[in-house]
Amino acid sequence: MPTGRPSLKELNAFNSNTLCESLGIEFTELSDDYIKAKMPVDHRTVQPFRILHGGASVALAETLGSVGALMTVGSEKIVVGVEINANHLKSVSEGFVHGTARPVRVGNTVQVWNIKIVDDHENLVCVSRLTVLVKEK
Image (tube, rainbow, N blue to C red; front, side, top):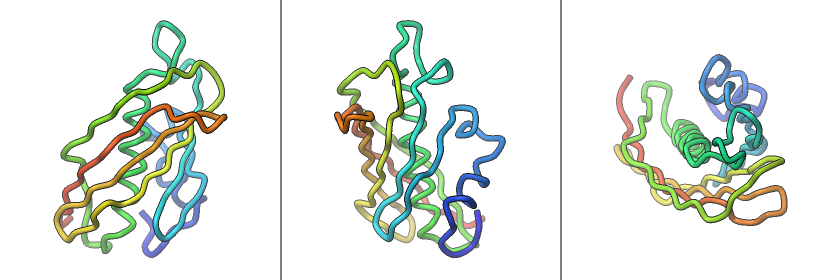
């Protein structure tokens, strides 16, 4: 991860050769209090009924919360997810889903992040909460 606040280009390059790249996850916006990304609803992210796979939503949520958390710690630390939950509220069969992660608590050892995922029409698709542990490298 680049030091300081990375650009969107740097963030997306950081995810090269990872699950994020395989799922088509792309960071789209950064702020002091949130991070956003989008993910396509296509052959990589749907289940056999051709609707968004819940696991793909969870992967997007954990990616957003983990990267958001990583941007709050120094270069000598890493973050690891220790718990995630998700409520799948609406099915999606085409287009993109868009996730927004916001911190609930940014502590020195534990962070909690809320993630909301919506479809292209701003319909709420999934809500998730991620807890991460902050560790020394």
